[in-house]
Length: 560
Image 1 (cartoon, rainbow, N blue to C red):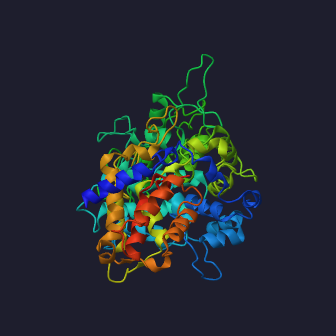
Image 2: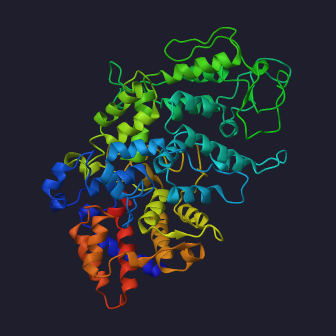
Image 3: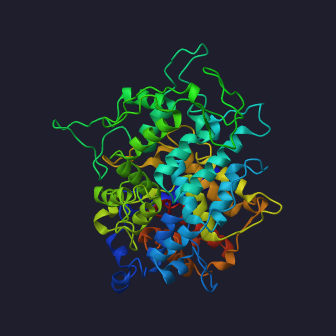
């Protein structure tokens, strides 16, 4: 298999013109701009999107597009349905869908398996996609939740199931409410030491609380390290230097303001004592005896109330952070990066951040309005990115998105009654270095500011886990999925008869749907040449070879 994988990679490389290089910075050749035709492009609006625009929208707002395949009326979430009702209405429909069946931490089924089954089959695609993005901002990992003999369940699994349900619940909600729910969540309480974070020692003497949660809340969940303009660019001082968004003293102040929370129990412990039995099914409990009630200076000259109780100080601390000018651009840019492009223009960030500041009704932090602004923005819409931005637009599909996009395009039948197809999908993603929900650190699966290889000034977070081993793992996943019995044994059955049989028709089909108008002539020629090889001597071999090379191509692996 290794030899076949190597040959395929070589073939892919030779078919990759500059437009096909594994980079988000290179454009298709100019003649590809004519694929849809000028008349169709002129009529392509969010309300009346063309086919390519609809596919692109589903790549950004779901775990992969699907075709209705003749079903009438076209089901919600399919390309044909988006074309029929338009993108604004498609978003309205997705916002109205309630979360799917909650993650079950006491089920025998692995959480990664549950995640991938929902991602592939769930109707609430946008909610899941946004929750997945939030999980990579507000990071909690099963790897950081130790199991305890004091609980009747597997701590890490129950904790993460509850946390994943929380992110799904708040995906379209109020950011301030989400921030408080995350702060009180028991999984986060264990992961970043919010639980049993006391302001007094066992003798009742004042001590400095643990700063872990306070620091990461400021650095990763709300502000970032530098002060920002509303467009996400650094706010410079009079000498042209970047300014810190917060100080070490302010980290300490927030740690004191957030002290005293512990596991839910019948009663609070005495001053300096702790509850040793974790409760991962209920929010953390406020215990004022272990809270520092003194006055603390937060951000922008704001102080907590002297003598205030634990709940008052929590409210004051979270309100102070929520109203900081850094939050709208910091959160808006990260959501754009996860859904649309790693390198949004300052204008794109500014437009979305302004919606975060005010959704039109005076409300701040309305995530539903923010998500709509991201997906309806002019930089996200159209058959392809705007020509002036195309060279640096898009992002490498992370392993999870790579797996789900491949699977959803092929629309397989999943046998969940007797097998566990989700676990196989999870293990494929794991082999490419993204094991959901086991992020290796608080910085998620890959560094959020990882530079794009070979290009100054651009970031490519997903490239942070792309190396020779994981590139090979991507090829091995495709080979195993298409050519071995692994998928069938896992309960994943694909009907390849749904694909065109004639070589030219199949290549055109893949270019029309899988690549929605970005098929480079070089790749097209190589596909036809490979399918014409005498060793591809059956219809099924030709189809699988074309799929393998198309999915492996950088044209597909870069979501534009």
